[in-house]
Length: 299
Ligand code: R5P
Image 1 (cartoon, rainbow, N blue to C red):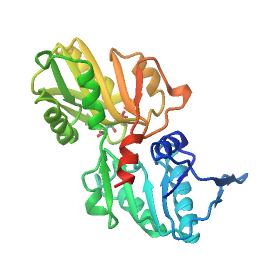
Image 2: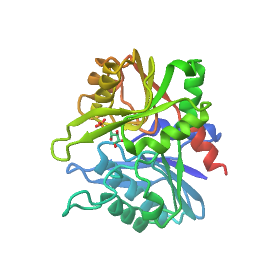
Image 3: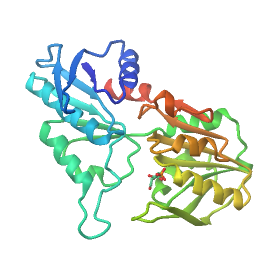
C-alpha cells in the first residue's frame, strides 16, 4: 500500500506510515497565486492500493478540495483502490435540514467523495449517526474511546468520586460506551442549547449524578463554548475538578486561550486534527490515533 498525505496533517500520515514500517510517498503540491492547487503524485501507483491521509479540518474547504484533487490524481494514475483517512469529516454536523431552506452539507460531501472515486473512508468518532445511511461506499467508524478509557484508567481515579459527562444529548451513545469500558463508571447528561443564529451555548439542566471529579467527553472542541458552559454548570452544581476528553481539536477562534483560562484542569484530545504550535497550551495533552489507524489498514 502507498500512503500519501495532503497538507492538513502530515505528521499523522508519517506516524501511520512508520507504524506500518514504511514512509509517506512523495507528492508535488503547487499553489498558484490565485490559491488554486496543482497536485501531482510522484510515485507509480498503477494497480496499487493507495491510502490518502487528509482530515477536513480548518481551512475546511481548502482541505476538502485538496483531498478531491489527491483522489483524482491517484485514480487517474491507475490506483487499484483509494482508501481515504479523513479522521475529522468536516461539515458532518449539518447532516439534515434544521430550518427550511438549508443545504444538507454532509450529503454534498458524500456526493463529492464518491464522485471523485473514493473506495473506502476511515473516520473517527463521527458526530452524525447518519453517515452509514448517507454514504454508499464503505465507511469505517473508528473511535478514540479506547485511548480515553486507558488514559482515565492510568489516573486510577476512584469510581466513587468520578462521573463521566456528556455536554449534550447527542453524546449519550458515546458516554454509555465509555462507562461500560470503565466498570460502569456513572455518567450524567447536560441539556445544552445552541442558538442557531448567534452560536451562543447555554445549559442549565443536568440529568444524573454529580461527583467531585467530572470528566466531560465530546467528539470535538471548536470554539470551546460547549466545554466552558458545561464546566461552569458542573462547578456550580458541586464538581471540584473538571477534566475534558474530546477527539477532534478544531480549536477555532480563540478556543485555546478560552480553554487555558477556564477552570478545566486538563484537556485530552487526539491528533485526528493537527494542533499547530500557536494553538498548543499548557493544559493540553494530545494522544495519538496512528496505531489504531495502522491496525485498521493492516486488516
Ligand atoms: C455539538 O453537538 C458537538 O458535539 C460539540 O459539542 C460542538 O460542536 C463543540 O463546539 P464548540 O466548541 O464550538 O462549542
